[in-house]
Image (cartoon, rainbow, N blue to C red):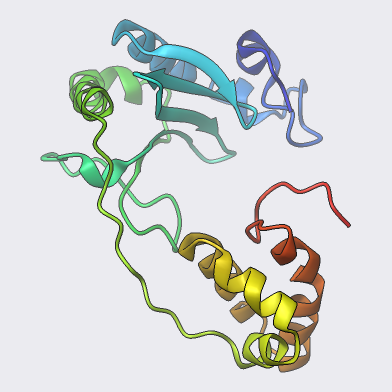
Length: 210
């Protein structure tokens, strides 16, 4: 992954084999991404690189992240549950998102067209950051897959580590394991996740362990 901000806008994020090629998604949406960059910097946000993408911060908090895909490019808001969105611009970034948290564009002119609304959302997010406000934690109950329950019953060390995970990390395993249609596959996934769970990581987090 890239670590310098200018590298992203010139070559891409470095997370796939299309990096620094004409097929890179960042290159296809270069104009629109630079418009979002201009808007964020104009709002007074501090530009950094996190997870291979431009991240904009204020008062020590992440405010938004920019990203590009084959079919669209996006500005994603952290702590989006705090935001008022009178125009209904925010959309959920994925099927498991709890709150609408991003605006996607399929046209490079999109950011300029929505600039006043984006600036308003950024201003509100910055005010929340300055005040130290965070969305209230909501306890989400979810049913553990039978294969995971069996593994936890057999393996006290695994059970202790799993229950010490944050609800979000626990949920990431539940989603990943339940995505498998066959019980044998679900059990195999549980076994494969053991060391990652013991390390305190979520199913999708980067990890350098075994």
